[in-house]
Image 1: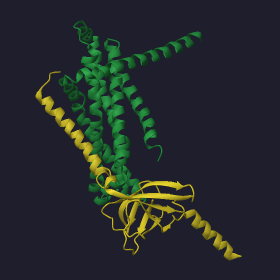
Image 2 (image 1 turned 45 degrees about the vertical axis):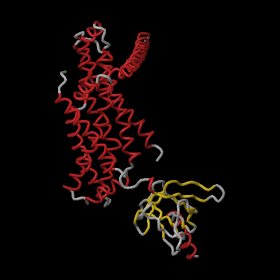
Image 3 (image 1 turned 90 degrees about the horizontal axis):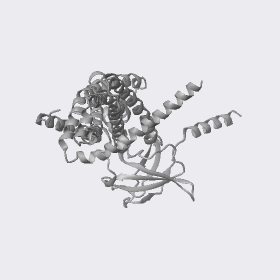
Image 4 (image 1 turned 120 degrees about the horizontal axis):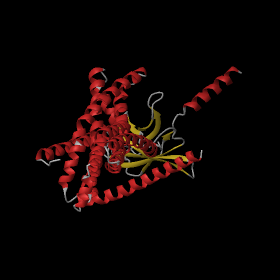
Length: 260
Length: 155
């Protein structure tokens, strides 16, 4: 019994210590962003591996999610003779929720896990300590460009996801199911607000990109430098990112769309 | 990873595609392209009851949308609902004896303000007030009245 309590206490303390380390790490990385700006090639390199390489999975998933929304929405709405609302339904669910959330989950799986594995392996093969020996701050050189790249890529990826999704919904709705083209677009434009819907979606995706990249980078930096440790850290990245993204999504949605 | 110019190009394409996506969402999917607050003038009207009218509900004349409700507040002395509407600048030839009523689009649809132009030679200007108004029809009240009336008749 005493042992159980002891273990509980130790675990709680360990998790708070970890959160403290993560916050400290984040502060250093954010300060380090300033020293990335004079060296844009570091950023371009990371934008390539974080953003460009995620492009394909995001757009293809977006297309299919939009097509499924078109199909499912049509079956529900046609019961009420409201097929004209299909465009609004597809676009609103994509822009407000699915665009930011699903692309962030895919981003955590595709780019986040790669970041953790890369940095964990750098640590395991003592490249990070090697940099410190050469008086190069690994946080400024390795971590900060990746954080900035994640922050820039995520809103762009989410916007692409929503755009391609709307096009997918249009292909299914107008092309396959014969919804009226004019009603599809005009109802969408009439009821979606730029500030309330589009901008809030962009804010969501920036927050998710920040959190997912932070978790991925910290788990890699904090990994036990063995092959097993790196594999565990990669798993934790995906799991923790998914939890944080979904939890934060609830909070942000309650804040943004609560009062209506 | 080696830094190459192909990488630069791909990153450039990616960023351009992302920004194009944002533009598409802003202009094609949302209402940004269709109505702008700056090119409009404001008129207001007092209603006994504004029912389920909301900010951004449409304002229309003869079924054509010409503006939207910009704010709804309560006049604390008369206890009436003050509805402020922004009307597109293009429609600045509304007579000043125009009347406003709150209608419902379809049986369950949203409520909107319908303006009925009068015959005056003077036109509505910014911050004008509409004098003739008709409140929202509250379905529950209408049903209540109907039931009450049919009970009366049975006696």
